[in-house]
Image (cartoon, rainbow, N blue to C red; front, side, top):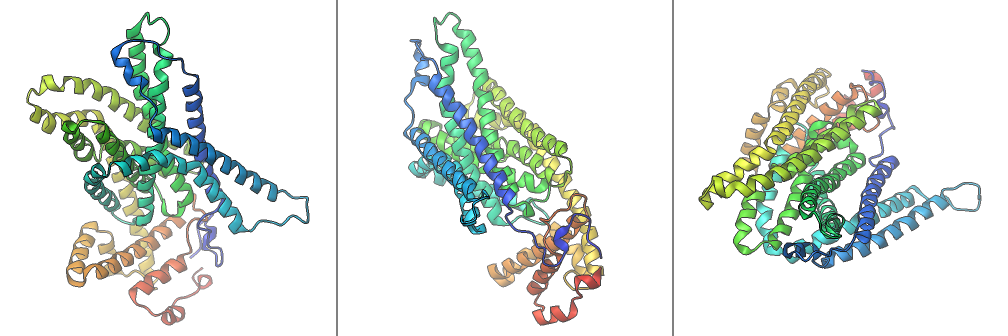
Length: 496
């Protein structure tokens, strides 16, 4: 049994590092892109012409800056300074030519890199934390449906599932970093962009309004989708071992989208009058919960996840760019079309209750339906490919006769419906502890088969863990003593 070309991790003693240096470097690069976009926005904010119009509705654009917005700016400047000092320190200590200069340890380098990443990203969490903490009742209203949707997204991985903590990390990014980046960028657009279109003698106000109402949805789509896709990209480069294709990308993107939707819903509930809060909840937490933000970020995540097995840099860039373009274009289209449809909803549905129960779902289907269908189709195709690859890998593992997977278990592992029924029976018989053991055991078997499949694919890399360790984990959960494993399992040299 020989390893596939490029699968260096199958050699004894060559287990890949869980967090390689260039993984952190890639995450820092993404964080620097977000900081650069914010810096460009601030330059436009500071240089925007002053609004001189006396029109009544223009007062909306003259509102004072929210306190969390100002705090974010200060904390970001501090964060940039901290990141610059840490980066300079790393650069100076790693330069050669001075024998007496101590060489930094691996732990020191990782700590500095983590510090740089945190200094660049954490300031964006100021606005969401202020909003969520200051509007606790609205948050408690939105949490139950959001968490239920997150569980549904997790269960959409019918075969091998990513660890729950990774999905929670994506959700947390959407709540704090993606949500904060989006809120901050949208706030400066509201305060500064009108000055570029509505200042001066005000000779053509309608033209300025048209340009403004075209630019706002476009700018909102770009900054929000960039902030959400950045979360998928960061988690991908840091934990590539768990992201194995478009299925993982779609699921991670959906988790990030759910987190962003939670932050945005709480933000809008704090702005509207109590009479309109039910409409917002119905629109964002029921009808639009798994559409809109979830659909757009799922498409961006699919593009990022697809790069796991693309060998050409050009193909990887095309996949990422195509996913981000679909997400941004979908967001822009949904905002523009929804704005026109919502203005006519009262004409189509004179009854207000009918407009809510029927009109909002119809408008959501018109604006986001094609993108929901697209990410569902991508997910289905990815699951089919997983089923084919796992079938071959499970049969190969059963044939080798090492006991981790047997022929009678293959049909169960390949049938999500049968596994769900078994989980329910085990839960009724053995409770939560028994269910957790069953889930860990089956996921260990599927992980063993998945990595076996990946090892044979073009583009196999050092992120694929050692097969022997995965098999030992399965046998341990199966109750096979370690002594029995060592005497009955052949070495990798024997197998090859």
